[in-house]
Image (cartoon, rainbow, N blue to C red; front, side, top):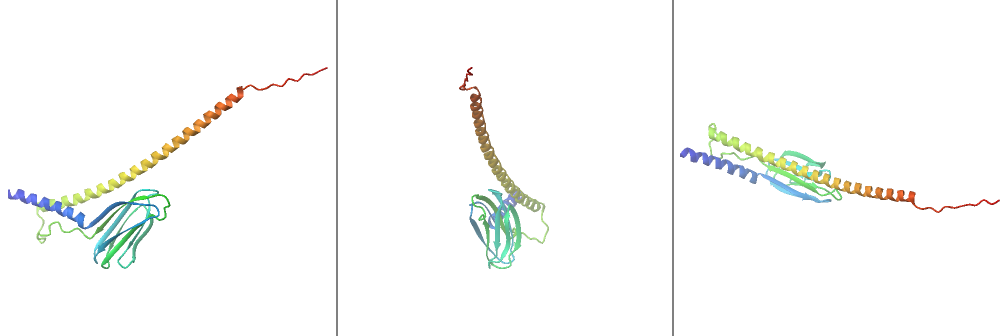
Length: 216
């Protein structure tokens, strides 16, 4: 019975640590970026913290966006123009509020849907109250493996959702183009048919004949 309760406690601890890591050390968002617009986000970071910014344009135009990352003093750490997706990792050199912006100012009529994931810091230890001098037990090793597997599953699900959304957007755009092309073809066929009917009728219409008499 004690072993059973210990197993349950370890699994609950794994799940709680996993949820805590996702809540406290990451910012993940999908948002709409209108044309001629710029959207900025801010994050307080302490010196020596390792951070990773990953973004991807899900829908809109050529699936590109401008991205810019600045530190607390306004120094540009990362700047890319018209990128579809990218990932940037850095270590904070100073304390303060860091800013990263996404710009669609180069687009005049196309809005974008942008996804980003901003990870700040490393994951906390899975067993913070355990003695790390000794080797992990079999149960603890299994919990660590489950924890890592859950993180991988979440990453795969996120990327698959992004790919599904991008594919659906492309399919809808293609469907709209095909519909307009079909309407254009139908209109052209109608005009050609009417023109042929008018032309054929003109061949069989009555024409006035002129008779000339030749006298002696």
